[in-house]
Amino acid sequence: MLDTHRLRVFRSVVASGSVQAAAANLGYTPSAVSQHVTALQRETGLALFERAGRGLRVTAAGTVLAEQADAILARLGEAETVVADLRAGRTGTLSLSYFASVGAAWLPGVVHRLTADFPGVRLDLALRESLPDDPAQCSDVQIAVERPDFRGRPGFGVVHLLDDPYVVVLPDGHPLAARSEIELAELAGERWVDNDFARGWCRRNLVEACSAAGFRPPFHVEAHDYPTALAFVGAGIGITVLPELGAVRLPAGTRAVPVVRPVPVRTILAVVREAVASTPPVVAALAELRTVAALTPAAAPRSR
Image (cartoon, rainbow, N blue to C red; front, side, top):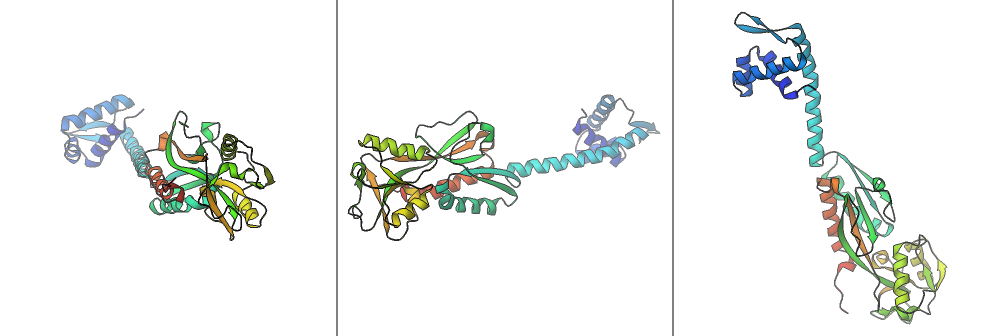
């Protein structure tokens, strides 16, 4: 493997015409330049210079190597520029995945900041409801719902973003709609609209809270997502219980009321690949996620 620093010194000697001139240009002593050239000749097994009177003349082999050195050093300079750009976040790719209810609520602000601050970075966005089992399939940043005690996995860090309590969405004319909060057990006799077709952690969390309140939620109608379930409530089909972040856009004629005793809460985290955690785009993405999470109504303290 050729030493690129010796190549630079050698190229300077060829361009300058002498060891003394190269030493002056590089800020080295003539003896240091001579040592680098001697070491490069030993490294290549080639005679790169020959004596010409009191000076040196480049050999045919040295001329060819100097031409190749120009291309090598140019490519090295390009690589160094790419490395600097990657370190500064001016180029590259950032993969970011999210679940449905934070897509419209949080992602516009995050993507706007990243595209404005890092226009050379390509964003790979993916809708993903849970963390992949294979770490290789994980995004650089994944906004995920997990248990509060989730500690991540090797190679990944965890950033807490929000504890999102659940609310019940009812028609305005419902007898409980005027309440400031509703005990979960009071909903046992209602006609429930399911809103989680995937049967993921959010639904399991709700079922566990209902079990703690002494009943199992009586799902009468199944919807595959929050907007459809909310539309069913607006049509007078029943009530639905979901995280507050999923109820930020309510249909006309409905209202959301916090549920208590117990209060189901889902924890929203950013799971970050440690290898890219300190890169400027990831730092900016996390800062923006913290900002939008803090502006979420669920982040405001409640009086109980």
